Length: 362
Ligand SMILES: Cc1ncc(COP(=O)(O)O)c(C=O)c1O
Image (cartoon, rainbow, N blue to C red; front, side, top):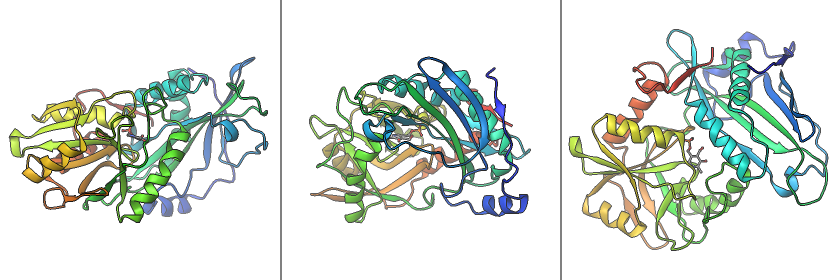
């Protein structure tokens, strides 16, 4: 177990203030009273692991992360269960993805134990901020960046690894379907690039396409592959699923991991859960033309995106420069909503967890 230096924040918010925040948290606007922090240097390895008051830090204008972009992050959620305990979901997958992201960006890889301990100690300390009920949760954001000062282009020798947390409500209104814009002008990731890593630069590069989607009246952007600009990869910050057919005979398809998609924890869980619920669920390739044709012919009946923040977001309309199509009746589909409930019920302790996915934090 990692030794932690714990400095409690005497100036944290009052219990009344916290109650008010968790009752109506919004998304990512308010942060808890503390943060977990660890330093790394080539000389000392990981050191000064602590939970300390959430506070701004001083930054040198020549800090390497803001020049050359060595910055990675993760996103997880903690749910308050009906008995008051607090659980997160498959955190070891986030810890391992964080290590892979670090490796890709030539950064040091924090041990799984360090990652899990920092998350656990922060949530224990700020337990009062974990909301209960419905779609509410505590969003946990581990992140790491190069903190060394200098201008040489090379892997930094010093890093800061922090975990912060924010009580959140639903990311999208789950009763409504989102509209998506298929980006043919911009790509998110190319073979050999950083698409599989959760690094800050991927998100910076995606913002222009997201802005274009908004201009077209859409909520999110859909990415195609970089080479042929034909194969569907993922949506904004979420993976995609397609429902073929309907009722008990329905099948699920999700784009395969080619090295340019982010391997989502939710995606992986839904492949298992889809099969558990009796829907033949597989990974494969689907082109944008095939998608339009299959929606038109009624072969594809539902489309949804999935990720930690929104869990599952139904997609009701798909637009591109040349085509515009409604998925089904444009409303959230029954299989989408069934899967959403099945996953959320496991995450919130309502349904049994036969795959040992949940992880107790408090
Ligand atoms: C680009 C991208 N794809 C997919 C996902 C979904 O991953 P997860 O289910 O692990 O949240 C995310 C969010 O982390 C993402 O940023």
